[in-house]
Length: 210
Image (cartoon, rainbow, N blue to C red; front, side):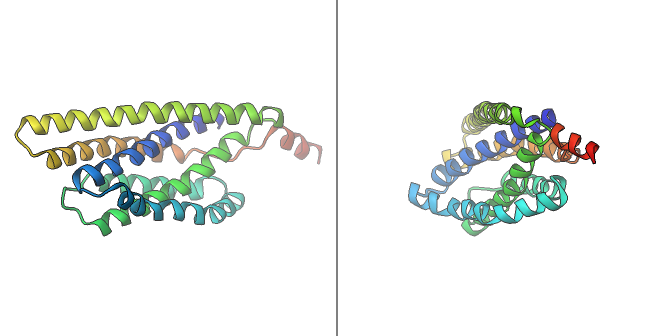
């Protein structure tokens, strides 16, 4: 469970950090929004994640990681696929709605996966397990961001070579990068079904004693 959790957290980090970079680039370079407008558009998603946190924690405690994480991964995949279909003229309300759905998917997925991955560890290894998870998350996020930006830049360059105007070419690049992120989210969705909450060795010994 810990190994699977690390893999899932890495995939989630690629999607999260990549999406956090791609959407602002699209908003500013394609739609012409300034930094304040961009920040205001993505702010509701962050607020939604904070508001949902207590409810997601209760769902995890009652039903384990699969119940919140599977729907969350599905929402994440659908929102990223929708982002891969946006154009230079997609309305701001649509973009806001998609970002809210993506944020909800991230909220439903991240905390249950992180908690379930560390649950089978003995107490003396909690800090080490958490450090490993955080390290791999940061590495995967950085590598994934570089990969998605490379995909975006390559597609933008090809579109420019075909005579497309820069905003339209950038939109092509963003769509291609979101398409790759969608593929990673789909893999996450397929694997998250197998995530379970395992008892730590201390809990297992306690149950055996009873």
